[in-house]
Length: 199
Image (cartoon, rainbow, N blue to C red; front, side, top):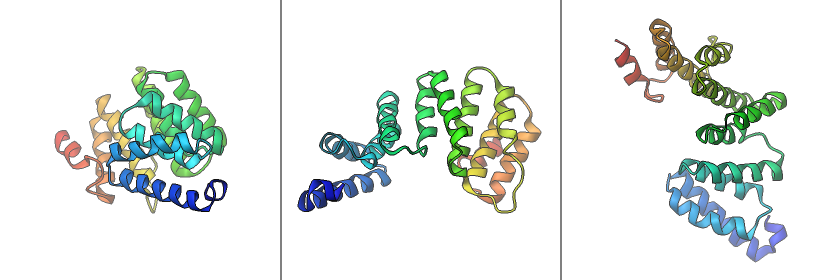
């Protein structure tokens, strides 16, 4: 990006992207959006700009715009990294078939374990939203086995599965999984409150 814009202009653009990234990381999404709206107009061929713009819109709950920006990122980069976020936007918009298409693409491409796990959680959420709680549970049960060194993705899947078990009234399994998450990270999500509510 810097090279294509010319050195001086490129350095200024890089500095503005860094500013937007800093605002995003500090959860100052309105500040990030102000910069990013200008950047997507100035450097429409930058996948990195579209990605950050889409993620910021997502954090603001602007599902339609976020999905569109992240679809542009996907086309520019060929990356599957934001498929779970795009799917979650479609889920929020009740565009369930589009969300399922994202999961199908992601599963076929099978990128990193973290991205696939996030996609699986969203796909299970889509099933639950459509009233198929049993299908949602089945989808996450496959990924719920205990592991020697749990990563964040394991905690996220265990938590999502525990939530589903609680929703269908299987409180012992819900409690077991919430406890498993809490034993690794007691501050993860709202797991303490969830466990308290089950006692």
